[in-house]
Each structure stands twice: as structure tokens, then as C-alpha cells.
Image 1 (cartoon, rainbow, N blue to C red):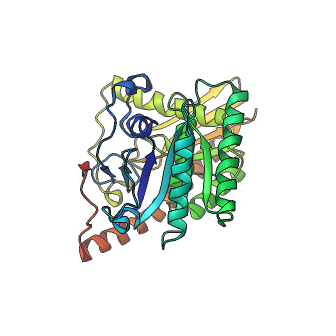
Image 2 (cartoon, rainbow, N blue to C red):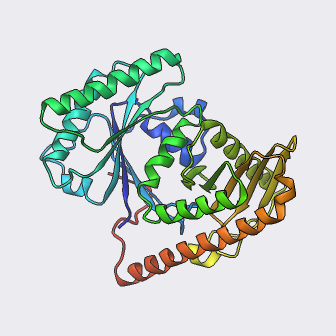
Length: 342
């Protein structure tokens, strides 16, 4: 069963725009033409059909639905859920949205789904000054916490993210959410920590190359500047491939394309900054940032360690693919319908 991300929130809060920008590469400025969701939209992302490492579903819910109404099967909605993403329009009156969020959390807490991760996206913050943005964040987090505490729910699993589709914050937030759904995360972080320690990398990311969501990074603090540099480098590589019509191989199941690494780029600036991009496999790419004057002198050592990291990551996911194939052969996946609307 593929883990689900449930996108919920009020009408016109920006739920559908998020999936269009992140997973379908729509320009943010064109999302104003997206119609409001009127039915539950189910979209499946899997490496066999969608050119991505990630293997999960997104269910986009209309804002007007009462998910706990007896007319709906809450078990069908909330079973196998990875995370519930509640999107709040920070530039609109969000009182109703907060009330519905609190009611939803309380309903979940009173069921077998109490351990579901709730990820609150305080969205559309691009037009707000930093001071107002901070005030909105404080207001939302404190009101939700206070109302839940008054109802007897202490420290439920709720995380808050400030997001916008017009900058990298939405990719950062989704990266953090999706990392929680990856069982191999600790292993990947350990491998990236070893790489960073051995090469002097300031930051090392493992990206899903098509969505630019990073599925893992070393455990050093993330800053938006390093993410944006890495994202820009991925765009450069993809644009170059498109410009020269480079014949990329057709997507294959993860286990069958481990040896199809085709892109490796090193960029240096003023002898004090080196960016390294290396495709680990068809869907994953490593981006490392080194800020050291002797980085060029250590390029051989860096390349060797990057190669070792790539082999280790592919071994991790070769095991995953073997288990996935075995499970699929034993029973069909009832959640494999793509782009279904109900």
C-alpha cells in the first residue's frame, strides 16, 4: 500500500497549486487559472510511471467536505495515511480554517488514527512583510495549541511550515514532510554525514531530480541559500539536457536503471565555492556544497567519495526495489489507480 499525503484546507487556500508547481512544473504565476477542487482528486506518483524516486499518493480534498460525516468512510480516507497537510491561506481570514483544523485533529485523536502526522502549511506568505509573517505564524500556532490543550489534547503530532509557491519554501516544506515517509532516511543521513565529513562538504543533499524535493540531507543545519544554489544547479542540468535534446533513456523500474547515471557536473567560483552534482541513478541526484579554498586540490578525493556514496545509496534502494517487487507479485496494489477523481 502506498503512503498517502492528504491535502486539506479551505477552498482557494492553494492546495491544488502546490501539486501543480512541485510535481507538474507549472509556473507559479499560472496557477491562478486552476479551477477549485470540487471532488476528491487522487494522484499516484510511482517510479514505474512518473519520472520520480518517490512512491506515494496525493489526495486533494475539496474545502467544503466534512470528512467525518457518516456519509464518508473515514477509514477509507485515513487508513495508510503518511501525513495530513492542512493548507491555510495566510493572506485571508483564516478563522474558519483554524476551527476546522482543530476539529479535524480532535476527531483524529479520538480514533485509531491519532498518530497521523499533521503538517500545517501557513501558505501564500510571499506578499507579507517579515514582521507580519511572524505575527501570523505565532497567532496560528498558539491558537491551535491553546484550543487543543483546552480540550485535553497535549502535544499532538502537529508541525508548522511557512510556505509559498513563489519561492523555495514550498519545496523545503514538502521535503521535510516526505522525508518522514522514507524508512531509509536514517541510513541515507548517515551516508551523507560520512560523505560530508570525508570531503569537507558544508552541505550534502540527495534530490528527487524532477520535483527538486530533497529526500535526505546530512544532519548539518539547512539554510535556504544552500538549497536554492542546489536547486538552481539541477535546473541548469535539466535545461541543458532539454536544450541539446539529449536522448535520456526511458524510465525503468528502480532496480533496472541503477547503472544509467548520465550527468556529473562540477562548478567552481573564486576558488572558494564548489558545487558538485552527480546523478546517483535515473531519479536521484547528489548535490554537494564545498566552501574551502583547497576544494579543487581535493577533487580526486571528493570524486572517489561521491562514487562510494552513489554505490551505497543504490544498494539501499536495490533492497527496497526487491522487497517492492516481491510484495507486488504476491498481491495486487489496490491503490495503483493514477489521477482518479471521486
